[in-house]
Length: 374
Image (cartoon, rainbow, N blue to C red; front, side, top):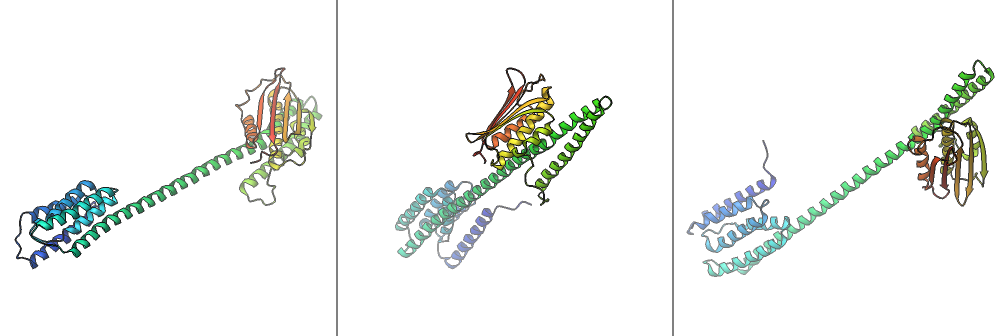
């Protein structure tokens, strides 16, 4: 069974209390002659009180007029004024403060004029008391409205702040997923590609040149061992359970010879400028970009030769990887490898350009600012 609203219950209780007060007044003052207004005006007031939350201004006017007419013209002097206080409070609480003040003033004025022309007289102390209750009802309604508005605003701000935290958490989660995907791609993609190339070479030369096959198998063993080590390191960092594992993958410009050797290519390397005191983030990103670029040469270019240039000039690490292979060139943006390289450069405030060379082959050029670490 549906329960009535709290406002309706309060209205019914107030009506019952006023009716009881009117009956008590009639019992003690039975000598007064009642008229039709003693029934009609209270009924109108009761009806206005019941709809005051739905129609606050209309109920305010109706109840105030009824009360203003009731006291000087009706025969019974009941406590109907209490309902006028309630309706004034409701109007102010609902945001109709000007209407409540205006009607309250008119109510007091009407009661004063009515008493002058009526058969009963209200002394000054009583009139002042009624005026005080009118002012108090309106003021209390305004205070409760302001407090409710303040609480609603505070709740809205709390919801916005919570929503902002959730959005920030989702953004960080998305960035972390991209970072993990990038790390796993860099760790696994290059080494597994090299294992695939060396396995093909071993199978091809197993019968004709066993010594080459033996060397290819040795390379596969070393590369797979390195892959497992780096994968263990990366997963240990993600889980944060391996205290002995290093906090970053082992790739570094200090190990550029190892990166070149692991590629299985004939790489002409050109290094210039100090490459030792490079910030860790820039160092790792540069090594990862070099590894991925050489892997792409091995997989896509159709040649086993490449040129690598790394320099530290004007506060930037400049990387250039080129090949002259006849292999099919890719569009510079569709692969995850190129996308990962671009993301690494962009995260440091740098740039990366990749595309076919006019004279043939493919070129990757990256600029990583040393002061762009975020």
